[in-house]
Length: 383
Figure 1 (cartoon, rainbow, N blue to C red):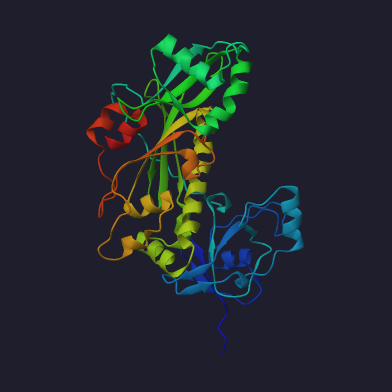
Figure 2 (cartoon, rainbow, N blue to C red):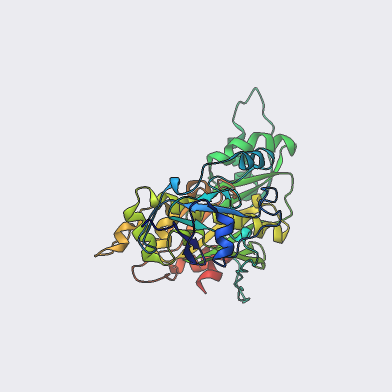
């Protein structure tokens, strides 16, 4: 006797068998899964979007293959052509279940959406941010004294602010020329220093006098939730807080399940890395909108996370953490750029500090130099 297909919905964990050809939306209603729909299953509202997951899920006892759902149909294509569906998404009212499958219901498709909110404790902080703003008036180019725009910005910083040397991120360099001309050779630059004796890096530039501030994003990357606090790098004020569910939950509800998924599915670690980076970018956009600022003003990010989340954020296979001697790729703090981490919502040159990670601990305190030198967002995480 052939059993009906088994379907497992995440993050709820609800599961059951349904007849072959059952629409995902119908299966969700039968099993009491929180999946939204207002158009009667006609593929108009798109509220029933789901994200099928493929691979071996030992925790659920399922091998989920792409053949477990019916193919992309004309209704989905019509909706995608008109409004667009995110990659990997299907309409629950159109996709039919043909075999054992794991299906994630993203937060925006849930009728009773979970609110993830972690408050930031307000406390007195002596401000000494790693990123600072400098207004400079730059010499115009002169064909008789040829020099590059960057070199003349460096010369202006040296003359007007006594800053002898500056490096730059390539993404900032590419935008420097139009910014200078738009500002009539008067610009505000953001310089980031990783330490007291480090050469500052030019990470952003605005035409004229920039007066709307710069911000840092402090993120607690947990296995279940991702919480973020947006901090004004000038005043230290936490201007907005927000959070979302960690979408990696569809690969496993606990950390070892995710390590197992990476072990059993080639490329599974890359899938989980892409999922969490996309979620962080979405969270950055949402928290910036809540604060009424542009994401281009977020120039710092600080991450605290447990070892498995640490590796998956960085794009490092966590398999070694699932077996003795549980070796970390690195236990040191890391200074990276948003571009290196694939955080597309932030400026590519935004500076990201990942706190040190230690085996068996969810997070570690920052080195003493960072308590005084790094951004207020970092110090809020450490306190």
